[in-house]
Length: 186
Image: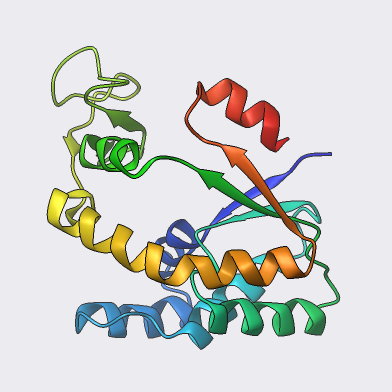
């Protein structure tokens, strides 16, 4: 079975880019510099999971990020008659996470991802796949990364405890080659 990968950041950006009603609502919050409300994120996730052509086998990435989101997500899944089968905690040392993120660049055209230290492009600043310009997202700059990781640490332990108490949590060692991590996940 094919497993669909759902990145909440990607589906949010796609909804905005495609001008969907939910995307327009999200864009209003984003243009004001505000976080997109959890209820709106859940509506976008619901729209994705219930699309007629969407795979019944999926993996969520980047959501939930706190206990309130987890509880709301559980309710949404119950409403659409889907069940959470497992929750993966990819465990990576903090210093390695910082290195992975602050050296991450993406192509403006095709969104291919690079790490300037671990997986650099053949030509500096140029995408190997389409020749597009590489750029660093603002949230991948060191100060943003360190702030995001502190928030993540503060809010993650309750999530880990929540899913562990429901016997859904599996921890994967993220400090190994990507193929080995994928093998453990799938």
